[in-house]
Image 1 (tube, rainbow, N blue to C red):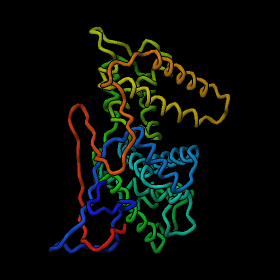
Image 2 (cartoon, helix red, strand yellow):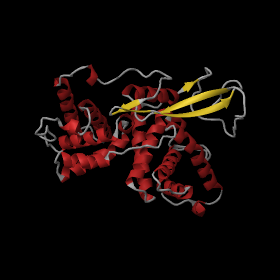
Image 3 (tube, one colour):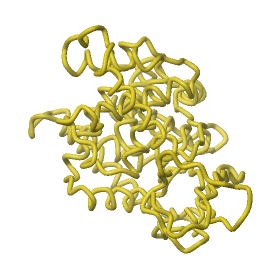
Image 4 (spheres, rainbow, N blue to C red):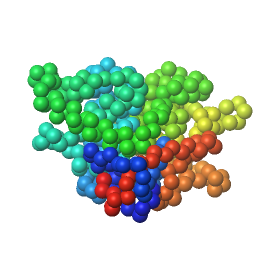
Length: 355
């Protein structure tokens, strides 16, 4: 984000009922750059900033994210939405809480007019249904979300003042969700890549099913914010092979090309995604001595050992962990093609910008 009059707003919200006069005069320019993916350092900084504003413990935050990602899944299925639309809503939820504190959106709000986690979920579903052209009305979403959270349908079938309060919360949150995306609606999912890579690597049906489940679970982590869809697909296949005990799969092909290069990915990125998903599985285990938890821990240790044994070849292969500097341009290069999108707002020069 760049502010050219020296004023740095705390977020990208424009004042309500504000219509600038663009007929003449000097203007301040606010530029927000859409960012496809974030580095590890950027994610950690954004999360730390959010935690600092809300004092939400890391483990509790992870549990809340996982809980409401599942809630979006259940609400989407109740609405009859396609799986990809549900996954789009889950990405929107993850992005939203990169920039906003969970403390500001409690699991339950005592005030009907104050938005809570379920309202954020409803808004993400609403926006996702428009992005993927599987549109659902406010009323349908409100009824589905309320039925899931309360165990019953709302009174008067969602009519009256209660429904109007719910609708207004979704409308107000919709703007915030769109601004966290910088109005960039290009959201990619790993499933097509997963099918293609499984066939390319000659994986079996059991592997494909397990990898598909892992790819869906990846939305409960920050992997969708940090890595492109094809790399998440490659990591899902690799982790599935490890969980199923297929030690010789995937392997280098007959021409000596490593499997991860066939999947157009770096092995370091693949292993990092595996660690994120394994951490989610381990934290979700209910019993300390759960055999499944021990299996995941063993896989993590094995991945760490392989990484330690591997010789890093050249500085170009190193991950860029440069700390994120506030105000720097948000650019990312994928396969040599630079992606750079800018949304610009202009405001009259009338003192400080209050957002």
